[in-house]
Image 1 (cartoon, rainbow over the protein chains, first blue to last red):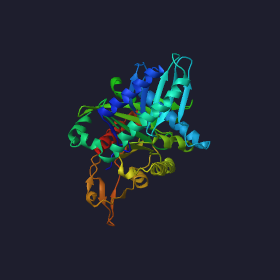
Image 2 (spheres, chains in turn orange, yellow):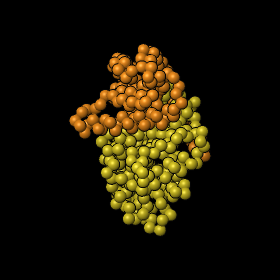
Image 3 (tube, rainbow over the protein chains, first blue to last red):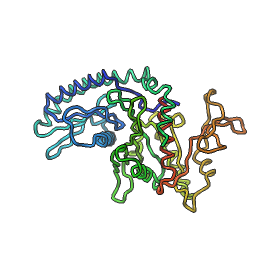
Image 4 (cartoon, each protein chain N blue to C red):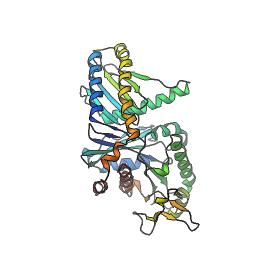
Length: 162
Length: 223
């Protein structure tokens, strides 16, 4: 049986490189927090202030929001809307696509401006695209998940003794 | 998706099926029964009449394997025919599928239409349902107009041809004594069927059996 359709994995090195890049971005733009979410709605990582929000739900809704907008773009004859912006009274969020695989969500407040976030986003998206491409090109070759769960059948069976 | 940094294995399971078949009810039962510390919020994007508009979502932690937390993200799709665009979006990057069929005889056509729609939407993404973790749940077994299991199986789970020679061996159905998941038909053809479960989701019967079976298949696909 083939594995799931999203067969890829992050290593510690990938994680460190992505985290460093996002930390720099948050510092430069004075934004509060960055979340990296995969297009199926799973949270990859968060960087910055730890906000008291349900990040799992947030990630799922972000992916759904982005996917719905993607389809709206197609209906009006666009390939995609490469970013989304939701403005609130205090908090705002900016979402951008990374390599058609992940979504970068930036949460920011009045300490910065949407203009600065948008301006800095372009370079950040390019940098993350390179890092993410590396992860996916490796994932397609030597499927790392195989190694992790190989021979774990007993452990999997035990998990379901409830 | 395996995240080595946060030591998590995240898997996406989608409950598919015709409208009012009990997909949301499955999730509501899981939400009500598992310990609060092992599950997240149940999110429903529904209309004011509680029909699923986009999806329901429930994250559940099943435990730890090799030091990795296994988290399953359970989704339902809107069953109503005209929501196909939303339904297709939810299938993106799915790891396992539960088809929740409505046992009522008069819903057979809706079941068939939904099953066909599932195959079509999956193939548009390039996914092959017959090669993925996939289980079928026949819900509403308590209703007087429920069709016999044999009829439901014949219509919704007739089996697909086993092309790989190494898989052509009789494989018993672990959930139904005397039945096989893979077997040779009298005509000589080898077929494989999806595991199936009977359920009364409003009472919780069969809900966890279904969830366990599909989750196990998803993890074993990684093993």
